[in-house]
Structures are given as C-alpha cells and as structure tokens.
Length: 59
Image (cartoon, rainbow, N blue to C red; front, top):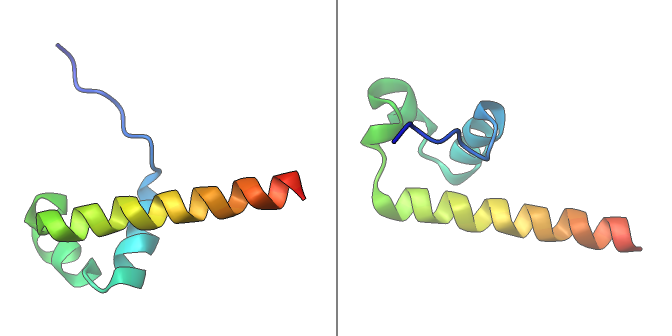
C-alpha cells in the first residue's frame, strides 16, 4: 500500500509547531522526533482552527 498524502500543508504544520513550542525539535530531528502528545496537540489545534473557519463562513 502506498503512502497516503497528508491533509495538513507543510506550512500549516510548521506554524502549529511554532505556536505550540516544539518547532526546534522538528528542525533538529524532523517530524519523527516530536512526542506523541505534541502531535496530538497539533491535531487538536488544527481542528479548533478549522471549526473557527467554518463558523466564520456560516456567519
């Protein structure tokens, strides 16, 4: 089975990593170097942003 393409853009992932404070780890070790908790927090924040964007569109 082929590797599935990610949903989040590379730029968005970097912005979230900066916002959540683990971008230095990403720069030094790559995405595989982050903790599972950090990855979960990144997904949680991305969902919050998406929900906010949906609310703006409905207003």
